[in-house]
Amino acid sequence: MNPTDPSEVSPREADLLNRARRYSFRARMDKGEFVGPVFERGLGSEVQDVNGKTFLDFNSGQMCAAIGHNHPTVVAAIKRACDTLIHAHSSYFNDQEILFAERLAGVMPPGLEKSLFLQSGADANEAAVLIARKYTGGLDVASPHISFHGLSDTARSLTFSGWHADHGPPVAGSHAMLAPYCYRCPLRQTFPDCGFACLDASFELLDAQATGPMAAVITEPLFSAGGVVEPPPGWLAKLRDMAHARGMLLILDEEQTGLGKLGTMFACQAEGVVPDIITVAKHLGGGISISAVTTTAAIEATVFDRGFIATHSHSNDPLICAAGIASLDVIEGEDMPAMARLIGSRWRGHLEALAQRFEMIGDIRGRGLLQGIELVEDRMSRKPAMEAGRKIGRYCLERGLIFSLRRGGSVLRFVPPATTTPAQIDRAAAILGDALAHVSPDGRTLA
Ligand SMILES: Cc1ncc(COP(=O)(O)O)c(C=O)c1O
Image 1 (cartoon, rainbow, N blue to C red):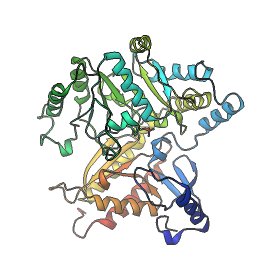
Image 2 (spheres, protein in one colour):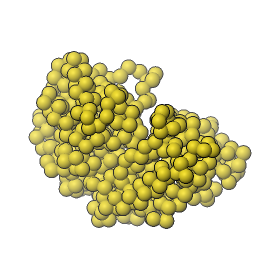
Image 3 (cartoon, rainbow, N blue to C red):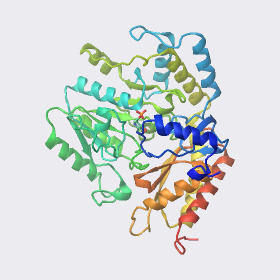
Image 4 (tube, protein in one colour):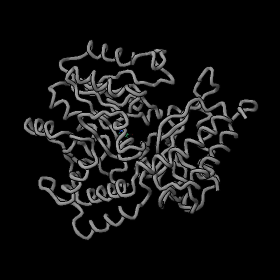
């Protein structure tokens, strides 16, 4: 059965899609049609649709199942919480939230020890920005132009990789700066000769636009939604120094990159940079919705004294915090950074081998469990091959491999869970290779 062909849907799937057509509000990022697959189960690195078809999930759900779908440690913790306390008063402490905050401090870079729990990645970033504003007394916040920080108001205003149009005016004080997208440098420079001209130009503009003291820079240490773009070495340290020189805080959105996914516990550790605030979400709850903002004791004390408040009815619920503790048990106990390095290097080997065969692969980026390839019409012009990417995505989905497309389809982003076996990696690579062969016009392969 072809899950993307509406003429081939089973009666059960057709019935569900009909109900979706009638009752489901379409507000998804990448897709507005009522087509399958419709998923109903998952375990480890595989998910199954309602027809019983199995898919290799190289998107880790929505990147939140990076420790594997339905990990037994998380499932057991959720079941225990169901027998004790699911929800609690948010003005009082409960045991699970205290223990979770302590565990999170244990994995964070030194000095970052005070955690506030929220529900989504967007609310964590929203809170981080508000903390920086309260702490510095400034309004202006900057983020690189291919960033993604979520779709609530403040987070969306600082998300420059898309999803702005016709969603109302941005929150005041939101500024874009140039991202270090070296494959397509906006200043037509080359690293390292550029000397980080993108940072100098960006801060010159920010200084000119500032309405007073500036509050923060918020950035991902590797831009995921913007196209799996890795800043060159030294960029993050220089960004921190330039921000601190102006009294701005550095907020690192490690929601995609943190907690072991890139082969270190946090991506910033590979650069030797400790930010003022880190936000984590995605696989923090092992598949359950919880996020955190973690900062220093000094910042927490100052903003507390100034009356900072940010919470939601479910933010510190024992059930979600128990899932978070279980997720950290897996991340630490199974050494997720090491697993990410191992899986990442096998997958990278496949991507490099494919790049030897297919001219269309212009660039390979990322590390560990977050890697991507940028497709181009040819390597000289570097013209983005968006339609080819979309065809490859459909071809792979039909053959049981899920991943996501970014930059209009020209970037294929792969986020396999840490449970992915060597055989599953090899199977995914074979499907991808067939797809590239399928879309590459004659004479355009390098083989
Ligand atoms: C880096 C980053 N920050 C923030 C978010 C937003 O998280 P959420 O969708 O949980 O609000 C995402 C989601 O993909 C993300 O990738």
